[in-house]
Length: 250
Image (tube, rainbow, N blue to C red; front, side, top):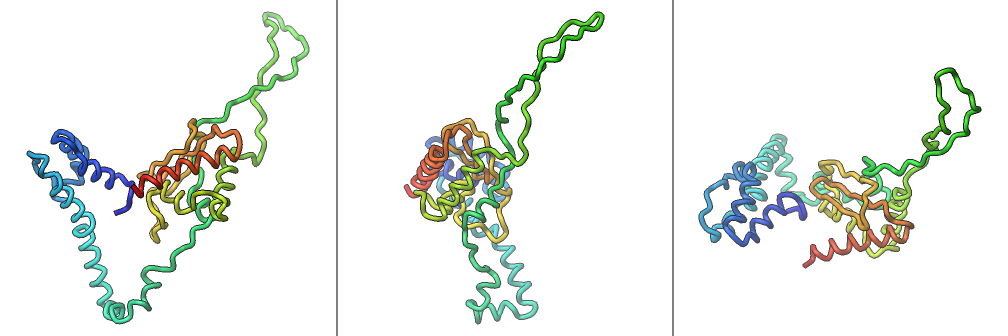
């Protein structure tokens, strides 16, 4: 199963439940999937925990995929393609699996596109030149006006520039983490599926934190905006991604 998704986290919580109340709490929060899997049954003892987890895994990896695969076989048999695939699997490999796309900085940059700015940049007001004193009847003199700052065309947040430089460093081996590590940290997968990722991966800027955070269930990466320079930004990303990679292998 794909690591670090909502389903795998739910299964992990079930498998490590220390009391019957904890197990029932997790089941109550996932009753729709349990109903679909035919596993929404009364649990009276913690000893039934492992059997419940095994049934859910079997449904997800075997039963749920059985009907789609059966329909695929029947469709391929229509023109005799299925028999040819069985006789020449190596010939049809590229047709059905396709060449594995090489993950580079350009690909990952376009995959994780900025969607929103979490915290808007601080607005600095500029003081306009005072108007010549001119008082109309019944009107008081006003102080100097405050106008919003001028926006520079083509200007982008520094964190976005840091992000692109960081990806380039990962590709060229100038970072302690790889592009695959960054992808896994963000989405939970090491290779982008041929059908793509849903929801579409996104990048949020302006996170008020020292280290980046990710939400693999939403394919979302939240980058901090508190880094004073590129080296601080790079160090925070490397520490977060390395820590996540270490946890996956323990």
